[in-house]
Length: 450
Image (cartoon, rainbow, N blue to C red; front, side, top):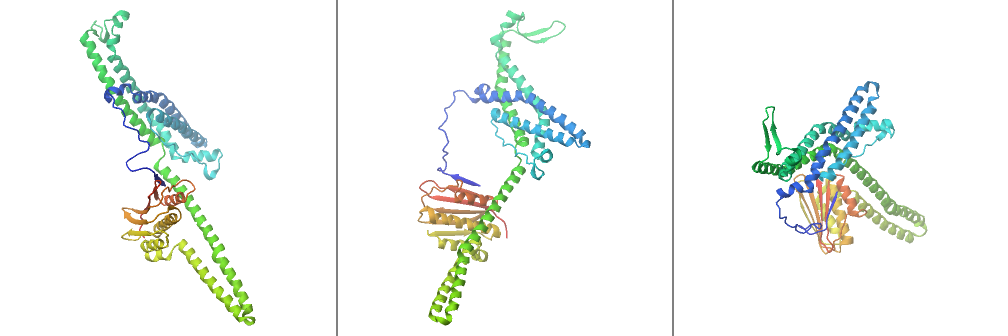
């Protein structure tokens, strides 16, 4: 995972200016706000959608369980789960549009090794935990949906009807032959109406209280709806973790294959070619040994130089695979050796009370190696600094330079590949490199004891 920071601390590029102050307090604005009416619409849609989902889930699940003895039940259960996934998609869309709740959809069902036929998809649906969670949602949502539907409708109708009562009270005696809104009536002829000014004002005041309280009730119910959608209709942590591990495994495999190809290419084009030429030179020297000893001696001397070059290339190749100094003396000595080969003066500070696991140590070493190579090739820096320390269960690694900046983890760059390799071991790469510099690249790796 890579994170880029291209702005100054404390400033967000998308931050808008100060919002104008409202003249009315939020309590008085809430009844007419769009958020309140969207929450009301969501609550009213809860019941019909939940009823349809409940009927589908109970009917198909009961039928599928009852038919399990005939082996027809499995496809019916898979059909129930497929329908529940459709309901889940509808509910996620409704939550996004009306409540502003963003929930990532579960990962698509994969038929796996059983192929894409009916049997493969049936088995994949039955094994999908996300599908079962959405089926559970279709069952448990109904009682809550009935509650939200009833409470929101009653609160809205009663609140606004009482609050606006003074505006339409005249209609009772004029149209319906009644002195006002009836509150009580019995068989003995006792009737109570809201017909005098005090009662009308009291009813309106009570309605105002209900109107002002209703938005907060709606928002609270919307929060519960959002929690249900997130808990049962989104991606579970386990599913996300499995997919992440699968992606990381692919990155590790690709990286290992690329390293093997690089080693094979370096051996073929470098040391192997030199050794082949050396063997040919020694063969010619052997033939000339008796005829022309001086020429033979000269050829042996040239072969000796080729041997030295081949040995140097093999040492460089071995250092690129895993340097001996890292194994023997740890990160401090290995990074100091790296800094000595960099074209920019580099200060190294390692603050570790013990050595991490060899795999983590190697990743840290090669991360610094690649970053220092980038500094040498692209940064135009005058100085650089490498710091490594431990923070709780993480190894923190920071490389700083005073170069021209502009480093990025965009696709195809070396930093993007480095971020992928760090992500394969639950690591993190943060790049802060504004144009003009300086550049600070921070990496995190999990601490694992040797």
